[in-house]
Amino acid sequence: MKNNLEAGKQTIRMLIVDDEPVICQGLRCTIDWEKLGIEVAGEAYDGEEALQLTEEQQIDLLLTDIRMEGMDGLELTAQLKRRYPHVRVIMISGYEDFDYARQAVRLHVSDYLLKPVDIDELVTVVRKVAAEIRDDKDMESGQNDAQRLSNEVLWLSNMVRNVPSYDRELPPHLQGEQYRIIAMQIDQFSVWRTGLSNQEYTDVQQQWLQSIGRRLEKHSLRCISVFDHINLLFTLVVADRLLEREEWDRALAEAVRPMNGDIRLYCAASRPYERLDDTADYCMEARRILEHHVLDHAAVVLLSESRERAEVSRTVAEYNSAGRVQLLAAALFKQDTAEVQQIVREMFLFFRERDFLLNEVVKACEEVAILLRQRLRQSGLTELDHGRGEPVDPYVYNSYEAIEALVNEEMLHLLRLMGKNGMDKSYWIIEKAKKYMQEQYSNELKAFEVAAWLKITPSYFSYIFKQSTSKSFTEYVNELRIDHAKRLLATTHDKVFEIADKVGYKEYKYFVSVFKAHTGMTPKEFRALNVRH
Image 1: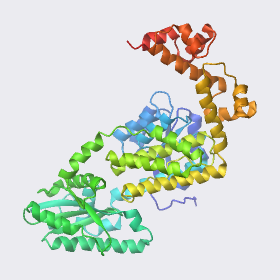
Image 2 (image 1 turned 90 degrees about the vertical axis):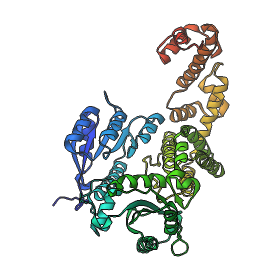
Image 3 (image 1 turned 30 degrees about the vertical axis):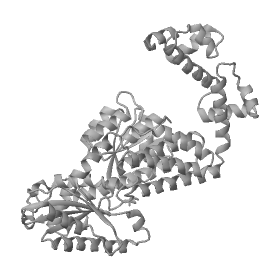
Image 4 (image 1 turned 45 degrees about the vertical axis):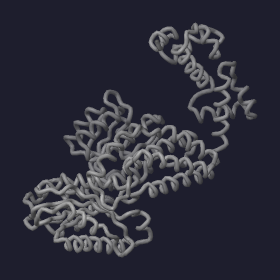
């Protein structure tokens, strides 16, 4: 008998993508995919072939390299999101580069791993993503028992998820003159849910369903409700006549009264509509409006009140994640808990002032977390897992305060881990060296002299400098000088030999040689292309 630990669950079809066939074979053969409930449906050696096989083989999951000839992993992911949005992507990169990681995050890859890949970590990531795929398939296929309680509930569930209804006929018992969709949540859910057992929360959900029905019935309204998430209840409200706005306002206010005295509710209401077969569109509208509760904490959020806020949110300037990572890394290496918490506090103040919605906050924090972990890993924190981990759920952590608490918890974890590994000493030696080199770059700089200034041995200095920067001392100094030379060439009328001397090169020909090696052109050619008139 085959040892398949995922027996009884749906098999996930996976495609391995890398432009080196030997790597594809290695990934296929190293792991017992069948044991994970994964079928390796094929291998592709470039992005175009991967797209074709995704369509032909009904692929659920791609395991792809980021750097490939032709269409690379980033472009492949972008194409998949447009053409096959259900397909999940796990990206593998041999490049510890912030820009690659940032682009991967913004394309919503399921995980981003660095080579050499740890097999145990890869198995963990694949198992997690496969579970998410199975959950999605269960939702779409209507396997959930709660969805099968009645034809009406199943029909509404499909409308909420905007998937084709299994029963194309509109439920006859839901016919009325006017309809409205309410999307409702429990306020501060993550705090309130703490300490409740699963059975206790199931009991609360049943009370919630009964409560919404009784409250709307007082206003002569009928309804059916379905949970789309443990903290997201969709209700279709049916009116047998056209209601005035004041009547709707009273009914909605009644619907969100606290339950059991202390369970606070809030909701978003779609516009009233008169065609039942338009329900899917109004479910989407209510879901979108609900996101704006975080901005003004109204118990009932309506379209007219959220539209202006939505425009503000869309015009927010790009969040400076790289700058925030730099500040956090410095504070973490100093083991300064107060400074770390202050940086996090300022992050969330920024989100509040710019009217970030919670999904935008989650994306910004996720990007910071990935880039920060990558920075720490480059600095030698080998025990740090660099996958994305469990994504933050804004329906559970449905407030700025709840997400901020999660981020602070993660920072404290990193502080403890770095304290245990003694990460601060070499980091600050190199930071001190970099600052000294910035100030002295125009003078003659020798590695042994900088080591002497730091009061450490030249060999130790060379070792930790290369570990920290991935460059030799000479490479770093040359890059520093050439960067300054490029600015002077573009912004001054100084002669080239004068600029060479200013940035620390006493021999003109050597300066030209180093400049061309770094930029691909001579200083005069660079100036011709970049001079500011």
